[in-house]
Length: 212
Image 1 (cartoon, rainbow, N blue to C red):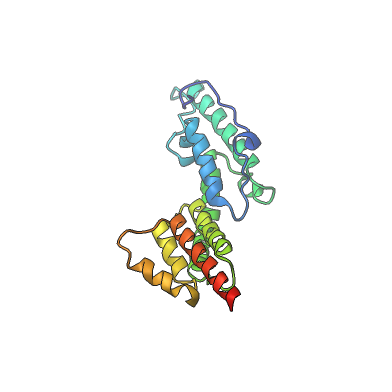
Image 2 (tube, one colour):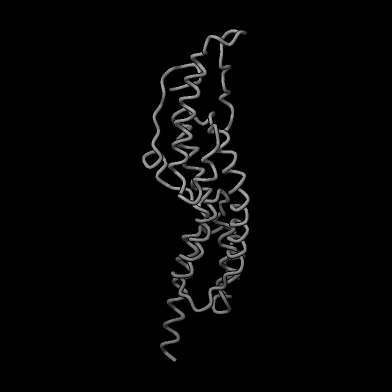
């Protein structure tokens, strides 16, 4: 593992180590990728600022270059290059003039974290205002699960219990009997079990409709 006091420089390549490129809408998953990779290499301290820059010189007269600083600087610039390579063309100019990995990281977080919070609010609103309408249970299940998965990627996971509540309250009158039964159950259902119950009820409704 590399640190600010060693001369071993870990080489990073944007497309290889950070294959998910940062866009205007995927900051949470991109940030998770960067965090996991750099932690794995023991390098995240360069971007969060905990791996401090060593003194440039070892003497008061500033005539002796500090080898630790040279190693730190080289590693830091490798990370800056990898971060640049992990951004799309439209985002690269935002960090092209930053001097350290920490500066680049702070600028990206400041620019896109707020946008991510806005996306989380939008997804939560969509989850609570998404009536089933004429969609089949399978389609509706997939749509609701996709929203929940997007929230999980944005580091705001939805519990199965909450997802079940959102689904039950937006099924429509045809499923009111099922909703009432599930609400009074002592043992809670998993989301998968709920879908099985709803699919079976949908099958019964289709059969009754065919007999009319």
